[in-house]
Amino acid sequence: MQLFYSQDYVRAAHAFDTTRKAEWIAESLEREPVADIELVAPEPATEAQVREIHDEAYVTAIRTGEPRALAESQEFVWDASLWPAVLASTGGVIAAARAAVRDGVAGSLSSGLHHAKRGRGDGYCTFNGLALAAKLLLREESTVSSVLILDLDAHCGGGTHSLVHDMPGVRHADVAVDPFDFYTPTPPHTLRFVRDAADYLPSITDLLASLEAEGTQFGLCLYNAGMDPYEGSKEGRLAGITRDVLAERERMVFAWLRRRQIPVAFVLAGGYTGPQLSEEGLVALHRLTIAEAATQGA
Ligand SMILES: [Zn+2]
Image (cartoon, rainbow, N blue to C red; front, side, top):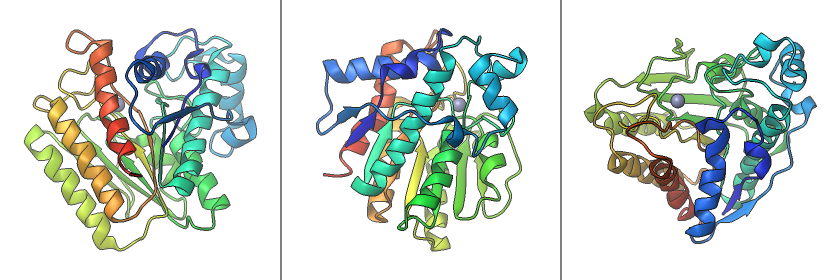
């Protein structure tokens, strides 16, 4: 399985989980490899690609730093390295989507995607690589006539919904535990909001069953595999969502995709260190996704 990552992902000067954890995970995979994983540096996304889903003024702000409020709308302190960093990690999502269509499964150590809107960033998200990869793959791959964006990050994917709700061929399915970036989904898109950890896995099971009942044979799933529902995550978090619950979530999701023969490209999404979650603990959570994905092609 190809897992996309380059050191450009972590070039931005602003030090935060979203701008650093890809490197922690890559180093962890060097120390303790997961079988059948190949780390691959992606081609960076181009400015023209990013402008397919974002306004010119916003893209220019990220490149130049001006106007500053727009360049920092994702809540990072802007510096000139943010631009190559977000192009690299956005390119990784596109590369993973293409590799998934070819190989059945792939991933990218990208995060900071699903809150980004057409004209600004939001909630640590600069460019919406999920919406962009869906748009590009629908155009360039004859086998992909519908794309499922499965968003299990703790927070609501309001940025993604604003970009894809009227994009033909895209189905956005979101399960959240934190109201940040809440939106009212336009049918057939769905947002399930979970308040009790006991309802978390049953809600996902029910979502997958209803997607199956809709009958669409998705040609690609983009899986936003956030680990911030974890009860120890500094942001997101829901009491009772343990590491075991998230491990079971990953087994369920990948088993469902495998049974339905849906190619999948996953990205990291949220997961935040703090008093209840160390760097090492966060890496271990994201490795649950990587380990489960790596068994997909076997
Ligand atoms: Zn989140």
